[in-house]
Amino acid sequence: GNGGGNDEGMEHLLRERNAIGNSMKAADAVLGQAAEVQSELRSQGSSLRGVQGTMLAIAGNIPGVNVLIDKIRKKRNKDDVIVSGVIAVCILFTIWYVFSS
Image (cartoon, rainbow, N blue to C red; front, side):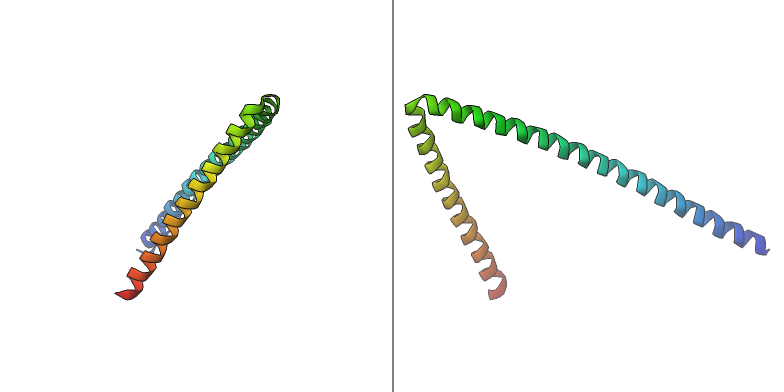
């Protein structure tokens, strides 16, 4: 009589242990993927920095390119300011809407 209840309890614990083991394996796999992505991003970052250095060297050799790069940079900065302003207005509107109702 009592042995059956014990076996059931053990079976439950074994199932739980297996589930935890599977969860740990899945977590390890995700962490492994994250480490791969991180190293890939680092590699891409150093490649992009190399490209940026090359572009700056080229820009230094061609006088008109400097002016063009400055114009692009200024326009991008202006665009960033506009986008930031729009986001700020949206956040303020959302806060106002949430607290006014």
